[in-house]
Picture (cartoon, one colour):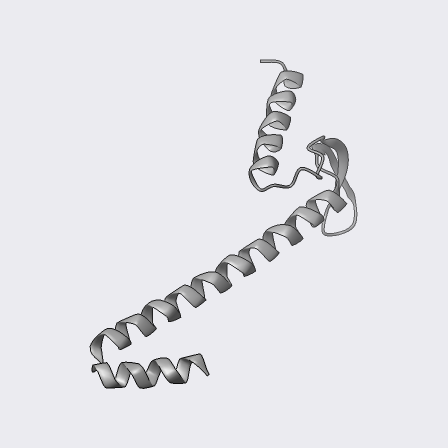
Length: 102
């Protein structure tokens, strides 16, 4: 398969993933970007996303991860609260509910 066809397919896949996240404002077009070694010397040029676009997507992914982790923690605490309420007496549940609503 020619390299150009592989690049087109990879671009199509990038677009599908970006759309799945709802990030329609991000271009999936790749560019030839030089990479740098840890010593600051130029390494081979690669066909990839420009650094600023990669950085932007990394920020978005980190924010999404933080948001989902927060929802997961809240869900765990809510489940734990329900377990505690299920084990308490009716009067205790009324008290706990009153405290929780304040």
